[in-house]
Image (cartoon, rainbow, N blue to C red; front, side, top):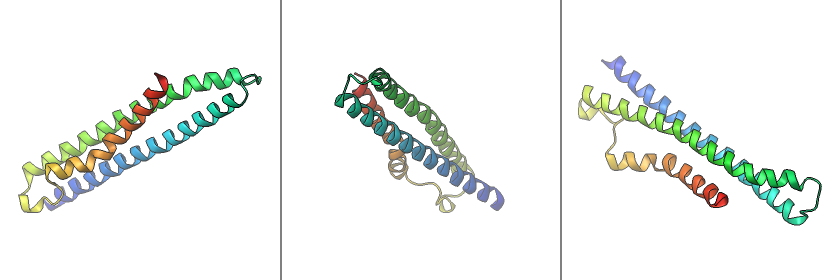
Length: 133
């Protein structure tokens, strides 16, 4: 029984680390894409008659699409990780006494804990949607 408990705890920690890594990937990729978008926009605004202006215009069209695609792909992975954590918590709640479940927090605490992984992708999605439309 103690071995099962340690296994659940280790799995929860692993899933939590994966969620953290996915949010980090998202923030890194979006920072890169938004910087590239701003640089391209400034370059095009400076002189639209340059020979590379066509490439810059194409980048201005493609970078937001790539940004949205990255957000959606990471969202799928985040949902998978958050579902795995939820399943593990439900399993632990059925198997162990309440006083052993320091792994299982109150619903409000759980909601607050997942707010960043849920809201950060939405923030980037809003930015790219505003740029596209």
